Length: 323
Image 1 (cartoon, rainbow, N blue to C red):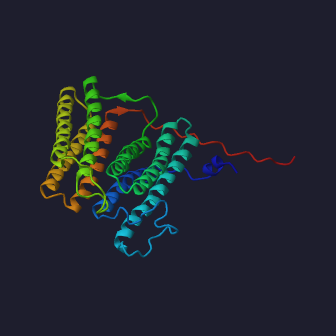
Image 2: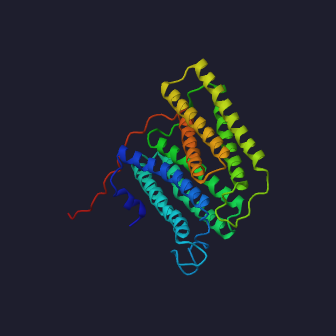
Image 3: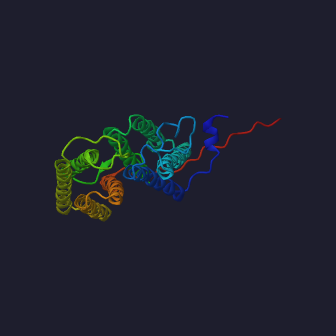
């Protein structure tokens, strides 16, 4: 039986199911970055020294004189979480595909859903490269940065379940559009700079991992400076909103982004002042995921793609009958 026929037999996902699946995608895509940071700050990055197996000949941790069981299971647990991410991603694809069978115009929804499992596969390959190269700082940076667009796309998928597929219509004036684009670009720059600071910092994922030989004080100032630029653009964007007038939902998302960005900046300053304690590093990674989601929410609120198309169920197959 063709796969399309099997998907057509699935119940049509209700709006509540669609929302739960998309929110689960956002949480798992952001959460895998947080658990990865826990692996890094606890020095468990090589708890499983091979990939895709944990040890040669075993997919699971085995007793090893040079590795503690805790270290092994922290790294192995992070790998197991990838399985949950794959399950959620697969369910998102099935839900989107089932919807498209009744609403053929929802091609964008299906395309966004497919970015979830494809992104997991890409992350698994990058993760393998990270382990096999001994956690070189730039491979760890790529591993984290690869997860950031997936968090963004997961939120876009959440939005796509609740909107149409018309050509996006901006709800703000041209200057506001340029400021929004600049804001997103600066967010990317802040994230990249943050991974460079991490590369020169003390938490490499393994005590013997070589670090980036660069002055961390200077790197931290560049990272902080980019965040200040992000906040300045955000402030100018708010002035533009006040001058031109925007819907109240957009103002709410704008306010949430301000709160999260300020909190993230304060947390970064605190962890630097305290000597980069392990727990604050993971909270900072969580904060970055929240800022990505809040920025994506603001971006989506500035554009309109029309209402969700009406559902037109495919006709049931006609069974042949004898004369």
